[in-house]
Image 1 (cartoon, one colour):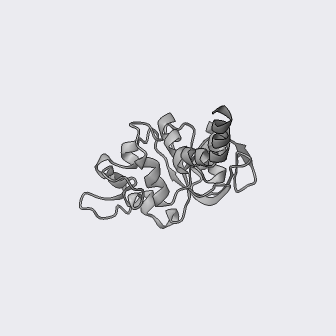
Image 2 (tube, one colour):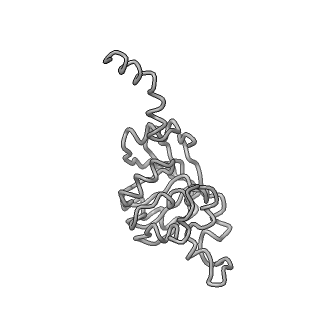
Image 3 (cartoon, rainbow, N blue to C red):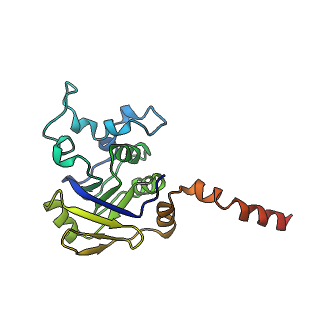
Amino acid sequence: MEPIRLIKSKTVVLPYSDIDTDQIIPARFLTTTTKAGLGQHAFSNWRYLADASTNPEFILNQDSARGCKILVAGNNFGCGSSREHAPWALLDFGFKAVISTEIADIFRSNSLKNGLLPVVIDKENHAWLMANPGTELTIDLQNSTLTLANGKAVSFKIEGFARYCLLNGVDELGFIMNQLDTIQQYEQARA
């Protein structure tokens, strides 16, 4: 994982609530155990028409979405079944963060473990983001704030251990592996 400190990007808005993990990455694409290439299948049922051609009406297929690293979605994002493939697909597509008023617990956990920053903010600021797609944001993980283009800072909560892992670009196993010397010293002292 790459460390996350600051994410500066324009936003892309999916103005739907209850976007579940099957909408993020349909079950037919869950046959792989690797992350590479899953981005092409993110929101596949919305991004592509029945004949497999690109749906020009879907926001992620429009020029305004190119290069956006921050996804702003409606309430209850990532609900449904647990699948690590959902944050994998979003990361491979190019997103670094997802902002909503509510993010499903299992999706949030999977995101944090894989380097996707789930940000929950209040309804008022969320409504402003939903009404202003393409706004420039800066997410500062160290200070747990996102700053709007007008300079307004909005704080968000993130569990301390998850924040540490994201800031340092390690997952839970990587954190433990970084503690091997301490673990070995403890084991030797107890022997």
